[in-house]
Length: 280
Image: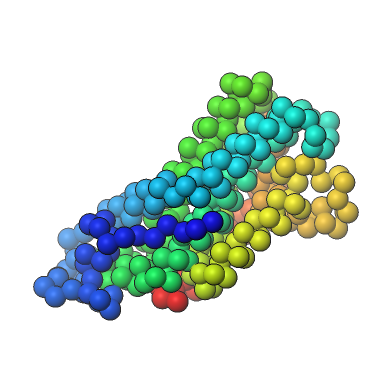
């Protein structure tokens, strides 16, 4: 998947910086800019830009919307996957929501950010009022907006066309999706902020594929060896899918799987905040 890279238009940080990423001639000192532009406003503006970049990328839309919705529609109608005693749509929808979150945070955002870092876009952002923490927050907000669209489309498809009728989960499921979005975005930013762009591209796609195979989100883990199945449930994608499945089954918030996702998220946030670098 090819990344989206900011251009030099009015929305970019290049308007505030010189060739080396410092303040351009005549620009106000950074402290003065900070006083004029509240941090929250800068974060929201950057989040809006991140959403536009994700939406403009055809490859990102395929990964974040096309593949998850395609999996849900196809395998709910063509009954070829082992889904245990559940109907295909009942098993697949929680997994597809988890896949959507991982595709956005771990793949799309990671690759986009890694190539922005490679091409010096993030270095220029370092000379604007946007702090490193603000940048990471903006990325998280952008993912949250995309995930909201994913949730509405997937649930709408399942309810309207595939005969899905949940026993509950209308409160717990959105909370779990938000938790998953935070976790996978932090993991994606950790990769993008510490590895080279090409390594991030390869590793994020490889990790996503491994997660799909061992996490039990597209098929039941029963055919897998016990050790592999347990390993998959200890990963954030498997735990998120299990927690969503329990929520929609009317079992409330599953403490164990939710704690697994939260633990991954907390560790990823701490590491990405400490290790994320503006420059390659």
